[in-house]
Length: 296
Image 1 (cartoon, rainbow, N blue to C red):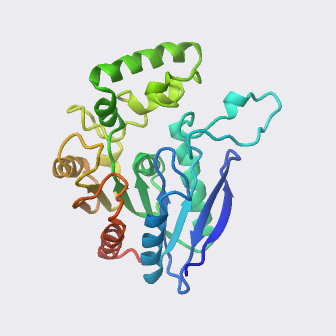
Image 2 (image 1 turned 90 degrees about the vertical axis):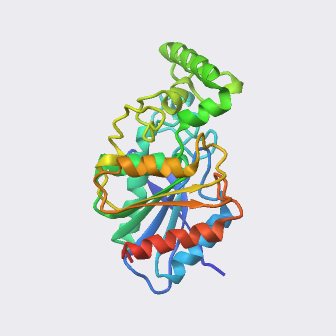
């Protein structure tokens, strides 16, 4: 049985985030921090949490998984000022400000360091991959010794696949129109439960969240190309959001990872976006990579 500790941390802007910490009996200086995807939370994906945390424990690595302020579809924290309206307090996948992920991830890393973990492997899944890359790009945090991007799919590519190119273009035009009047105005339900501002953050080219811009052949890839820490990009061959073979995506990422000390691209055969049924294989791939980088 794994001993799991429920914990709560506070960001610099006083947002509280719940999560779990799983520590090995014989500690090393290394912690793996998992950043969840869009609308997920620290308690989702228990099969991956179980397999990956067990693998970490066997190798003396602690496992941290906390909510970001984008957890679930909608959430809200207690108001800090009486004048603050309900809408201004709404967060979650539908309302979060992507750039605030820096505050969330920084808080988790700070907590891990307080517990004695000086070296961090930052693992982002889906939208969590966007956040992990963006965090390291903005902070150049020396505590992060390795970056693992799981299911690092462009939301724009996924949006075109879901809505069609014309449908997505219409959604963006509508979101821009609504955002001019009220950035928190909701999009029509066919586009999901998103504010106009959040929809644009996810699906408009060139916004901060567009860190995997492989649809644009002229994109600068300014985030990925500046990362010096070792990078691993892992896709499932049957990821339902792929718009091209995973092998081609890996090579695109490789071609833009210009500053990294090492780059690894792995495709897990038969795995979907959530790696369902392939959790053991994913855990093995992650740990093999960590050991190859001599991070522990």
